[in-house]
Image (tube, rainbow, N blue to C red; front, side, top):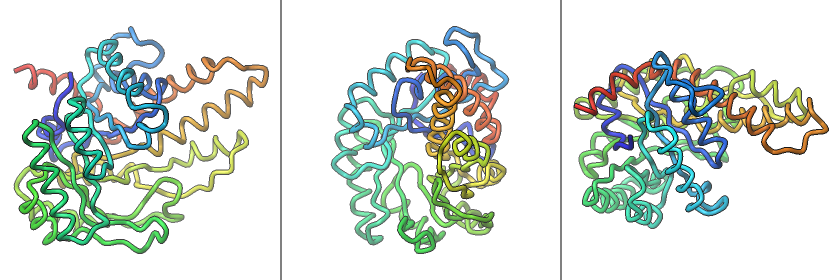
Length: 324
């Protein structure tokens, strides 16, 4: 069942957060659907309702250009048929104005993210407002962003203030808002020691916005030490850093964060499993061997993430609500 993310957020608000993942190929998509249904080894396994969860499947500009966006869309459509029990939103992530319009016109997505946080506030409002007006005419929800991290200098960033958040949402009518400055983290380029979560800042933003307004953490990858160590033990050279702490997922969810992006942890799982397969089976040249191992490991990874998000086991109740 494909729904607007706002339908998921109504169920999640204040209780749990929903994982947002950005797959690039067949194995990632199959593992993602399996994991969110509690299936580990096969597509036809029964749904494990104790861990099954709703999720957001994000398509990025990078994923579209990796081969051709039509390949990716076709795989997702087939996954819908193979896994009819799943409930998800389809989100076009990190778009500029032109690519957001293209995504809206495609009829494929239930939401888009307009990335104009690097612009001055007034310019960001103007761009976001245009995208929102265009999207809402076609029933598509819009994620926007204020505040910005400079990835060349991890400690040069504009934080999201409560005053700016309130003004921005009022002026743009965007459906959900990504906030920066809770603490900065970005995949393997993040902190070398645990940062402090600014719950006070998040609480002030929540209080300034309309009741039930959903927020987004765009930099939610945790960079688990286990996966970094496994990569390096199998020939990699990945420096360890600390991302968004998994124990903070439920904390931010209580303050209105409904969507947490976590694609970079998925890359770590992919790298570790493929490296280990070829290390342990040097005679192997069949691409299906590492692919099968990855789909299993990725499904297990998704189940773990959903437990930390609090979304595990929520699918049954959500399905009942959506089915009336």
